[in-house]
Image (cartoon, rainbow, N blue to C red; front, top):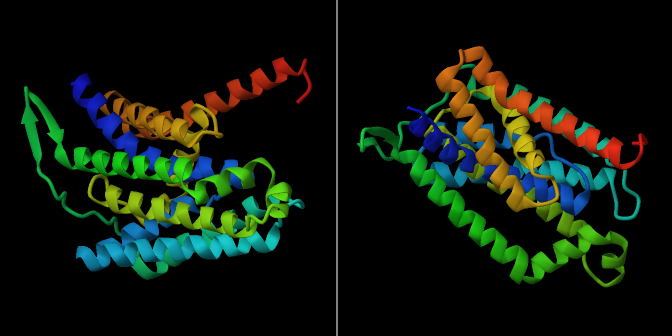
Length: 282
């Protein structure tokens, strides 16, 4: 049983890792975070559930990207390169996330949304495996490889790294920093939308899960450090394993709480290390 749970956790965690990627990327590029990223997941899943088929995929991704673009424009209005207040955009995205949750509740209702898996389950060597999770993991890996190639090899990736290191210097060198920041929000909406579509075929969603997905995305990014999207992807795998093992061996309440407790432990240890390295000064 434990092997089955581990496999499920790793595969499901890759989906969370896809959500952690834009969390880390946005933090590295802008120094801020988007609390509404979990809402994009639910919006995309709800649209996909309602429409279905290839058209549903297009509409779901479009809805998530539009929502992220709106948040990106709001953040750009609140911040500008060289004069950054990281707290204000975070509070703004929190308010937007609450609005999106109310909007989803109004439009789609309180019912859970779940689509039957594209691939059936199968039993291999006595282990029952959900083949949909393998398909999701394969898609996540392909997207991860494509993203890393874009970030490492393309002019856009170089502009993003320059904007992250020194926004003012990048602007003086002709890099459109504000456009780079905006595109990072849009990319986050794209990845969150894909995550929502994948999750719809595995666990399903409901209107209230937006903040839960946000916490899992941030937790995945935090485990191995916020400044590396690849580490965020690995952190998602850890969160998935913890969730799967908790669901297999603990009651429902603890199974939901364990990933959150692990995130709190990581945050506490990080603070303790910071205090120790500064001699008691934070």
